[in-house]
Image 1 (cartoon, helix red, strand yellow):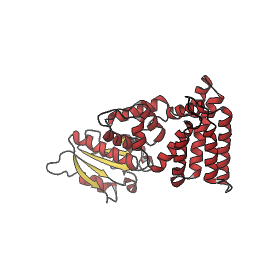
Image 2 (cartoon, one colour):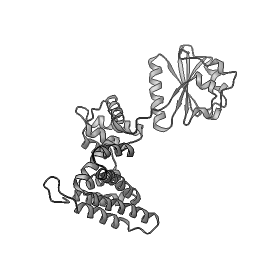
Image 3 (tube, helix red, strand yellow):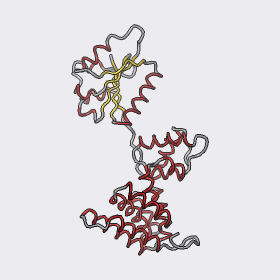
Image 4 (cartoon, helix red, strand yellow):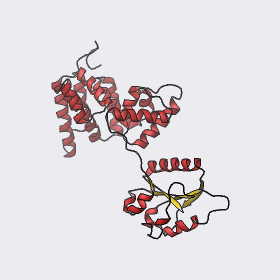
Length: 318
């Protein structure tokens, strides 16, 4: 009599949950009995499990694409057992099992789903730090903030943390490590552009502009700049406690907030208003087929950087 484990996930998340489940069952003394991929009915799944091999007293099998079998027939449902069953069926569903299985079946099964990490705030940063510890990575605060800014998908986050574990196995991972190891050419250029504008570094901005033009869509770049500088504008318009309230309303992340704060030190409120309106206009123009293209974007961004005010004794725009 089998115990049913349902994995409700797709892609990388499904593979990770399956691997973790197989490891757990192996530790509990179950042997792998193979995959079931050609069953036409749930009876084709249950019947072979009634005749275990001579030496394999506890085993588990993996059922691929169980949605094609639809629901478990009512006469088979009483045969489902709990966690101590001698046999286990791991059923892989890419979407919600409620589409295929009755509530009676789901209540008798163990259902595994990928976790949903926090979307923002300190809870999200703590979650990333915990995932880093699980991967053997010690993250500095800047690295944690940057990972939070760049990656939303939890499986992608875990993949990047595994990469960082190889890069810095015996030392804490820095913000620069994340910049070097965790983005491709196009994404890295866009992030360099955003940070360069916020820090009023003309050389970085020029270099990044030439790269994003080769790798990115102009609407995506315009939108990213608008979103980043809009935060800085709101921080200028609503300083102090009002700014903190606005941060919660906009759900900005720690890294975004920090870089927007740097932009506030370099640009006046009127300059930020002008560029935010200009970026919105550029975006509308591109969507209507009347935009000024990359040249218009470059002119708008460089005019802003060249009007920056020095915050540390450097000439403006350097």
